[in-house]
Length: 213
Image (cartoon, rainbow, N blue to C red; front, side, top):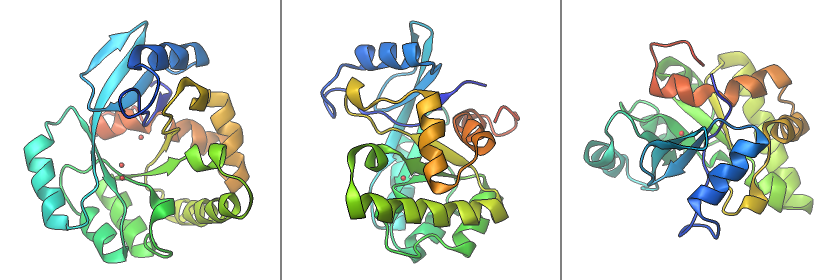
């Protein structure tokens, strides 16, 4: 099992090259990084895991994107929507993770969604970028959303992933810094460590190696 940042965005989506970001992440202690649109590979001992991000708001279009772009070795991340959309996505074969829960309407991820995520082995990603970049009331609102998510997680134990969504080397955070950030919304170190390694379970569900928006 390897500590993995579940999503970063190098150039052209971000302003740092993939090689520079992967090298920096490796020096911080990561052994794998998820990069949308990348080819699978390894650089300086850090494994690069490809991903696709599906931002459709129609479940039928999500299904079509999975059929068109999913290949079994690429992490499929779907952006969260309203309650009905999320429930439908969480029953779709080929989805690995639902993401950006903090941007979805309030109560968009509820007890039913939590149970579906657990039953189908679909992870919920916790995007740490707003905790790094935002301040004041907005940051507090996101902390409350994540705290509510952890309440559901404590009951249903659906998989979680953790992503910096870094667009620059300056946005990257080490595994230890991530563990400290997660304590702000009540996530203990054991759950944080599991979440940093969940990607491996998502890609190899039959292997208990322990994980999308």
